[in-house]
Image (cartoon, rainbow, N blue to C red; front, top):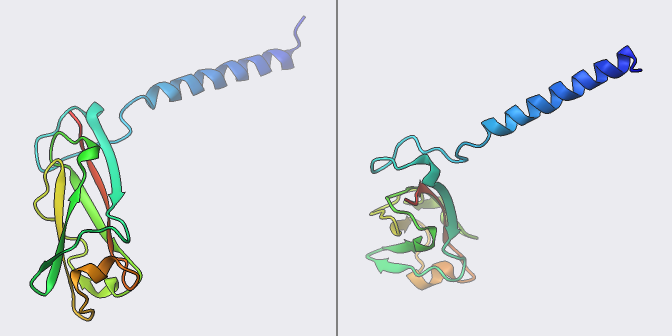
Length: 146
């Protein structure tokens, strides 16, 4: 024979497990939602976040007048359409006064370009990723893979 306390405990446990099951059902939607972008949206099931860095000592800067640019490869992300890209310049010196540190150019599903200008540092393109500066592009892209 069950006491009232035991029955009450069973009812509470059943309700708790029922609520937990409902919460799990609600979480089955996409973990990333893209509201809009450069192109028409695909299925939200194909939405993905991908990120990377060009590397502190391996960024391939190219001279561009008194500036530099770098083409960033995001082929491994597998985007089918142009993703939304956000960037930041990370380094050990002088990047805090650089211009262009959040400007993204010519984005495609596989690449984008960043132009940088530093008003105080007069380093050659090759010096930016050496011991003195260690500039690199850190990026996050959100897009569709189908």
